[in-house]
Image (cartoon, rainbow, N blue to C red; front, side, top):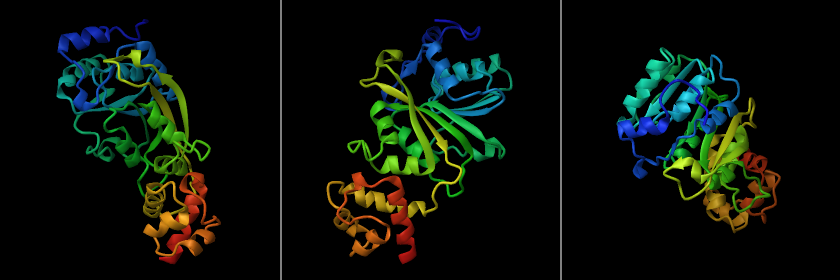
Length: 282
């Protein structure tokens, strides 16, 4: 393993600070700095960029982001045991690392970014990864404050993010929301053996780039429609969308769809048209 800086190896840092990963926090630490450097590089050129990291733990990815030239890293960590290790990294990279003691689901980043853009790069804790992603995709103003998301998820979640109707088993509400507003792709897999402790499943790095001008529609209506449609995904839309309108047939046809199709057969653009035509009826 090559060294990316002159700080101690991560395994030594973890042992010195007693940072055994906690299952209750969804923690799985990456010790391999070659791998964390690959993740940092996959986010694109970082020189001078502001990067937000969620759940840095002992700081393996944090170090890689800083070594790759990130001008500023805002690292949000709720496990206070990790704060001393992160402060050691902050001292090594003076003025470039801001450690936030808090829950990423509750922290307001707008006051810390000063109106400037940022990239989000994170090995997300498994237990809050999807709620965080949905939150980042849900602001009324678009494009959002972030310019890219480079995130680690369980492989099965990654497949749900990038799915299309051709991958019916994985295609659902999450795929519609993600691909309505973003271009999505899986960059590479991360094997179980890369983590301490090793999780039960393979992970994957996913990248989402915000579309400058996604098709306009009311996000809340889109979420309401997809909840109804995929909540009964084996039923035809004329039946599943009765949860939205008692007699949905004309509405479905107005959106250019056949009432007998199922949710898993409808592309993102079809759901957007459903939201648009529903808005005209309300």
